[in-house]
Amino acid sequence: MLHNRYFGITMAICVVCSGIFSLLIYNQIMKPVKRLQEQMVKTTEENRKAEKIRSEFVANVTHELKTPLTSIAGFIETLQDGAAENPEIRNKFIDIIAIETARLERLIEDVLVLSEIENKKAPLDIVPIDTKESLLNLISTIEPIANGKNITIETKLADQCFIEGNVDRFIQMMMNLIENAIKYSKEDQEGKVLVSSYPDKDKVYIEVSDNGIGIAEEHFGRLFERFYRVDKSRTKKGGGTGLGLSIVKHIAFLLNAEVTIKSKLGEGTTFTVIFNRKEE
Image (tube, helix red, strand yellow):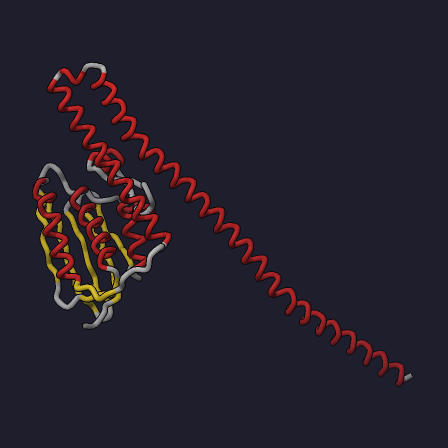
């Protein structure tokens, strides 16, 4: 009787151990399968999102191209129908056609830049960049545009603010931010854009500030989206393509930098780009 009890206990222990062992084996086998399933679901979702972004981008580009092309075609047709005989009307229409053509050129250039950045077809030349020297050179080329709009560009640039990256991309990023500050400065008073830089430990901070119309906080989360415009009429009037800040975001990613924004309606905006500092 005692023997049978021990035998039963032994069998029960064996069954429990066997069950535990089987469960462990099952978990070891199923864990990779579950991870693979989760990865497949994640990849499918990412592909779906990427396809949606591509579709929206194509639709937006088509719309942005169609608008000036339709305008240009309409004015050309009007000129061909006899308006060209009136010098005043002819000159006015030609000026509008020139503006729309320039807008098309900027849009195409920005689309090509985004495509080049995203596809990374060619390796970038990475070199130490003297941010003060690069910014002063850039500002000297933009200053005439700002002066023509009664906007003053001031600088407060620190020495020894070196970063590592591609010079052309860095210039492109900062040019977009400065042009954006000029574009959104107040038109009814003298505007001011301040470009400043300073080092802090292992970081370099570059700020582009304006005393313009400002941006409501509700727009912050979407500012860097392609073709997102806070004020569509004002942006188009200023010749914007809606891709400038998106390009800034992409270049910041390439340069391992971070972009932040501070703004208040009626009090201006400050964009800050935070780079990794390179010792010289």
